Image 1 (cartoon, rainbow, N blue to C red):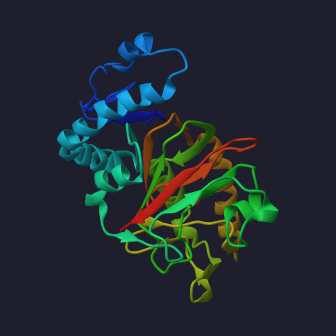
Image 2: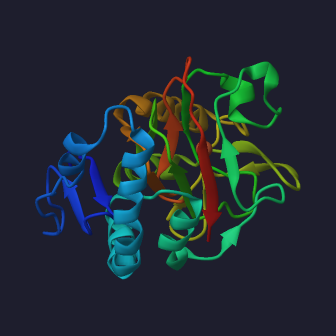
Image 3: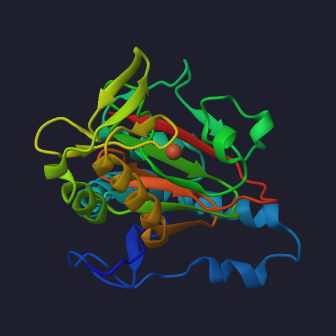
Length: 272
Ligand SMILES: [Fe+2]
């Protein structure tokens, strides 16, 4: 299946995209084009306030539809973009059906932004890669059972994209190595262990973190190389402002583009 970017707007209660996976996509009305010509020059705050006034009531009306849309897209693609998500509270609300919140280091919500290697904690991707691109990986791979879903939310636009390798590509790649038994060492909360790059039954839940996992055999080394190369096939997720990205952390991998000079602040939390 060709890679296609799908997004959904809470503001309009309908998805937009180039192609229709399940007959769901309808024309996308661009309401902001009516506001922009009348907005006073430079009065971005007033425009944002007007936009927020439109979005908030409609969000409550569209929450059931939004929840259904998110689940359908997660099932089909392993990730889902939702526009019009103004803050973490809204992101929390629209993902409530995806399972309980799971804390990381005692925090339910983490605020993340690019850091130099020298300023980052030793276990972080920033420590290993600084402002360079982050390779494809699973979050919380050091947990006995990684979080099922990652929810990212960004209020202000940023030129630094996230990337996602959709579920069908991720699963196909891992399954091509299943018979070869790739074995890694993996650092976990209870110490280092030998690990296959999946957990659960029937290879339905994959995991990979190049910072925590080291290949033990040739099959694992070749899988790690294949995952490194797969970065180029990942879908870029553009952060255009007031947006959420939900990633199925068991069936998809994600990463980040280079962040040189980027003022980028994301909030992130986990469910399931
Ligand atoms: Fe991550």
